[in-house]
Length: 316
Ligand code: BMA
Image (cartoon, rainbow, N blue to C red; front, side, top):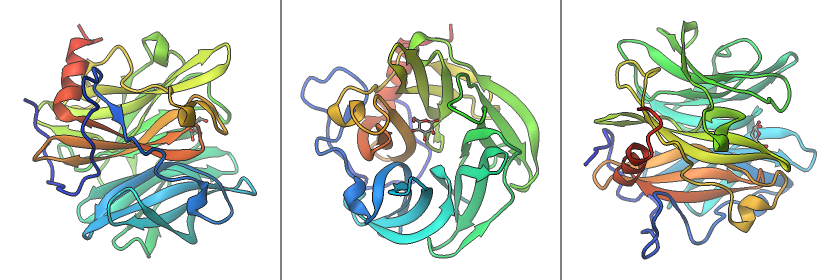
């Protein structure tokens, strides 16, 4: 039995797997949980991140407005399912991740610059006031994901170097820092291997610490005759040297199959940006963008995911 090393979250959004369901990750039966109707003038609300906050939850949401400007807003929820989004734009950009790190909530996101995208970093204590730090790298990069604690005295950031467009390649790297400002000691983590992820891979939620290593959910992209298909995969990274991949599932955990994943502004996308965890029960709730249109929710447990990774292990 694998263990999540983290806090208990008794109010994690949760549904048991449907009777007899054979796969490790299953969908919330009332998906999607957030749609364009959650905010006036939104065209789409998708790849977004949430964290436990006070007695409920807070989040940073990617909103593409009717102007098609890509912006981030804050929202709050009592149960993690019904959300109240605020009008105020906190940053321009997209694909936010949130990470509770030393009593502050750190936001990393795809920050636009005149020269391409980079990884913006900011923090807050109350989801009202934000302090923006230096960007974590020069352009061009996306999918910047912080680890929730220092590892051997260094902050760690998963990152995916890319180009200025719809990048036709992509590997995951780690950069390290003593102060969250100067980043270096870069290490390669992994490349696409299997067909379902053969175009590119990028880290998803904040990695989950377990007694077997860091559980990293990621997106993998296949280029088919019809364009890109984004699916969710999982790997276990070494506890002390997280650029070492210990185990990695050779097949996806969730792929676009439901109508809200297959139809939308960008069809055939499930794009995970955040996971809530309950250490006591091992429950994990993954929030993912569906078809670049809405936010949906899926569930797994640490045991089911690690079992699936090991049974279908790419690392021999
Ligand atoms: C990626 C990112 C994501 C998006 C995905 C599919 O490059 O821009 O925001 O969900 O493409 O369009």
